[in-house]
Image (cartoon, rainbow, N blue to C red; front, side):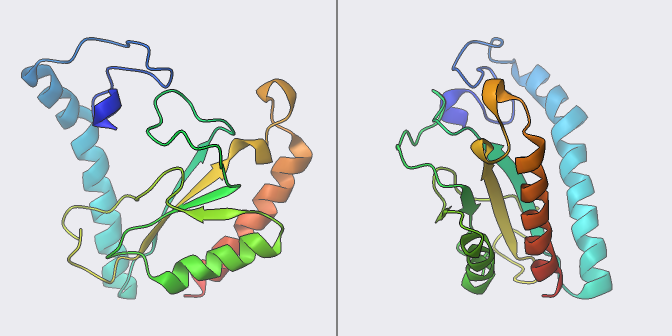
Length: 174
C-alpha cells in the first residue's frame, strides 16, 4: 500500500487523490508514536492475554471492499468475490480457510483466497514465530449489504450478520 500512498502515513486517498505532502521524518515518527505504536501495543497485549488464558489466539481481521476496484488497488481484476479470505503462509492453517469457505459457499456466496486483497494483521512479536497465533482476514464485498445509492439494505445486512455469526460460532469452537 506504500506504493500508492496508503501505507502507515497516508498521503493519497482511495481515488489516488492527494491528501497531504509526505510527512517529514519527525512528523512521521510523531504520528507513529501517537497512533500506530499504541494500537499495535494493545493488539499485542490482547494476544498475550489470550495466549496465557487459552494457549492460543485466533485473530480475525475484518474489512469490506467495493464491488468495483478503486483506482488505488494494485489488483484491477474484474473478478470480485463475495468474500475475500486473506491469508499468511505461516499463520493461516488451510483447515481454517476450508471451514470458513464451506460455511460461506453453503450459503451461496463466492469466496477467493487473497483476491483482491491478501495478508492479515499479526503482532510483530509473533510474526512467523508463533503458530499459536492463527489468523485470517475476512473481507466482505459491500454489494452484499448495500442497496441503491450506497445506503445500507437492512434485510441484506440482517442476513449478513446471521452468516457472519455462523462463521464466528464455528471459529469459536476451534
